[in-house]
Image 1 (cartoon, rainbow, N blue to C red):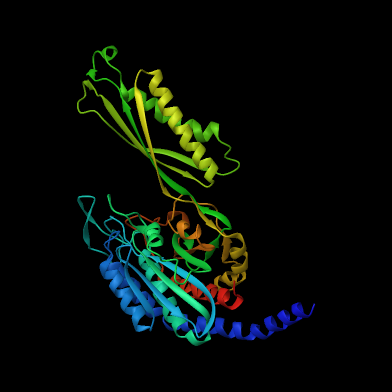
Image 2 (image 1 turned 45 degrees about the vertical axis):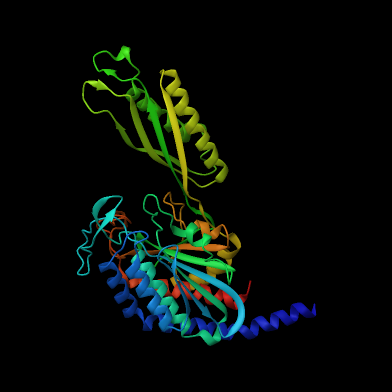
Length: 430
C-alpha cells in the first residue's frame, strides 16, 4: 500500500514538470517552423534516389553534430544516426525518418520544384520527393533541435535514425531498414520504443491518424514464368500456347482473394501488373512472364496466399500442357503498431492534433519498412495529413504522383508530435 501511495505522489509531483516540458516543446517547435520549411524546400530541390542520399546525409550529419550529438555516418550505405544523451539516466527512444526520393519527374507547380536527374536500374530518370521523405527529414531535424534544447531535462536518450532506401535499394544492392538493423542501429544503446510518421495526401493538413495493430500491409513480389511450346499462330494445335495459359492463370489468381480466403478476418490483394511474352503477331511464343504484388495483414494468411498462388498457377499450366515456375519474394513485413504503446501515446497525440483532428486510420495496402524496426522494438507509426484543408480530399494528388503537394503548415505539427511522444515516453519510463 505504501509503495502505491509513494508512486502516486511521485506521479503527481512529476505532472507539473511534464506539462512545462510539453509547453516548451510547442514554443520551440513554432520558433523553428520557418527553418523546418526551409530545410524541406532545400531537400526537395536536391532529391536523391535510394542508397545515393549522399548530400542529404551530409546535411543531416552536419546539423546533428552542430547540436552536440554523437553521430555515425555511412550506416547501410548513406544512413545517419545521432545520439542525444539526456541530463539524467533513463530509457532510450528511437525516432526514424527516411531520406530517399523516387524516380519520378515532378509536375507540381512550386518554386522549389525538382529538376534533378538520376540513374535508376540503368535508365536515366527524373528524381522527385514524390512520397514526402523530404518532409520526414526536415521534421526530424526539427525534433532534434527541439530536444537538444532541453537536453538537461531529458531523463534518458534519443536515437535519431535517418534511413536510406525505404523505397527499396537498387537491383543487386542491400539497403533500407533491414540493412540498418544488420549494421547495429538498434544496439548500443538499444531503444525501448521507436516512433515514426508519414505524411499522407488526402488527409487535411495537421490532422493525425493512427491505428493500433496492423496499419500497413506486407508487400511481396511474385513472378510467374509460363512455359509452352512455340508454333505458328495459324497452327496453335502444333504447340502449347503460354499466352492463353497465362491469361487463365491471371483470372484464376483472382479467385484466391474473392473466393478462397476469409477476407472478414483481414483484407488482402493479389495483383498481376505486367505481362510479357512474344515478339511477332503470327508466332505463339515459348514463354510468357507475369509479375505482380501480394498484400496482406496477417502472417498466416500471407503464407496461405503464397501457397495458393503456386498451386493455382501450376495446376492451370499443367491442365494446358504447359508448365509454370513461381517465384515469390517477401519484400516488406506488416507495419503493426504495439497496442500498449499506442494506447499510452494517444492522449499526447490528441493534445497535439487538437479537437476532432485525431482520427482512427483505416488499414492501407501500401507498405513501409518501418515494420522491421517494430519487429525488434515496440513501435508506433502514424500519419500526418498534408493536403490543404480547403481542398477536395478526394482530388488530392496521392503520394508517388508527379503532382504530389505538401501544405507546409503541417510540418510544425510533425515536429510537435514526435517531440511530444518522445518526452512523454521518457518521462514515464519503460
